[in-house]
Image (tube, rainbow, N blue to C red; front, side, top):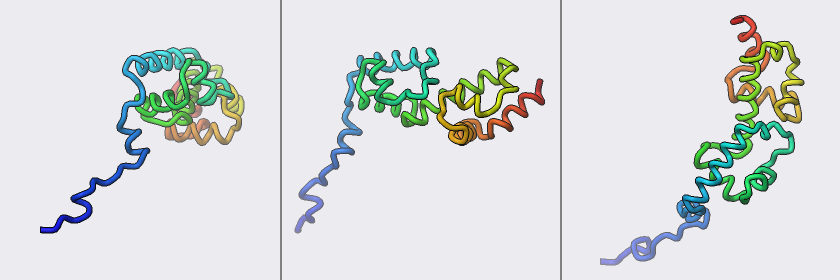
Length: 144
């Protein structure tokens, strides 16, 4: 009986498939980066408008590849979504806990959260919370 080509020669895996399955980072290094990332989350440095993956990697004393891998694996999102979610959750927390923020314009909240534009803030706010910043503020105001 003749063997087909596929049975004789195993399929080659692409480099990206191999690298996804191969652990790039030791467990110790992973835990270290994760710990530093959790400290970063408490620091409010994510509000810095210039906080890029490269800047954060430098602050956490790691490289962008490792940091990106950790965020993807443990936060289950890419870097931009991770930072944006931290920013939106921070503003949502301020709106809930400090009623003075309910009177601020959305453009001020966007700037405070580290967004470069009002529209980007509104888009991300809605994607994280499911409602626009104005609707969110209205709901909080009605519940007070």
